[in-house]
Length: 194
Image 1 (cartoon, rainbow, N blue to C red):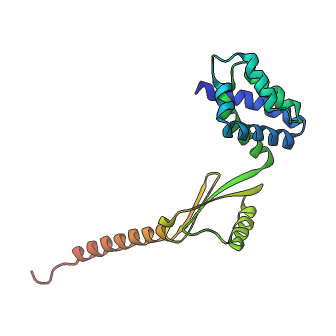
Image 2 (image 1 turned 90 degrees about the vertical axis):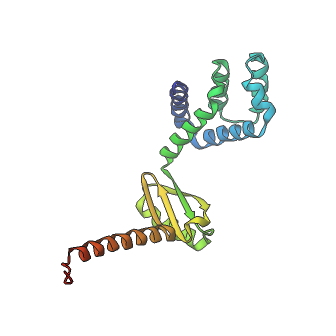
Image 3 (image 1 turned 180 degrees about the vertical axis):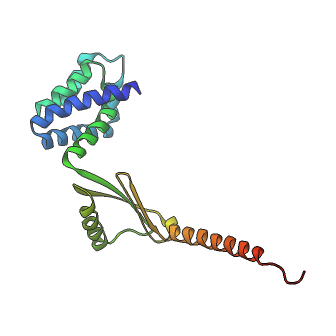
């Protein structure tokens, strides 16, 4: 928990710096570096290893950042290295992504369907959701055959379940309720055989 708080502070400070400069370019370079770290086991292990000399880590970091044009990104990553906070890089990246998406008003929408969406369905869904959210819609699609048909759409604090599985569940619940009501009514009718 403490590391997340520290990471959030670093991310917020860095975000304020790049917000004043070139937000899109800086964010793109930062995410490019994160992708490089993710893909390079060697870079990741050297930067994270506690017994490797800080100067050696700094050389390696400068080499990895030599094509970057935004000094704020380079300076921030070097600061993390100097302050021995490179272990927080993943959490900082998550926090920075959240801040960036919030600033750009990008709303992540998770869509689960039984079969992949067609292009026309995707466009219609984005247009429909665009009227409901303030910002741009970013679809994250997942195919889940268990929902049988229809779709489940989740974003912000809303979930819209229009799946066949959910409709069958609701119908089953309604039938059970009707059965219970019918049985109660039948029990209430006096027996004429007595």
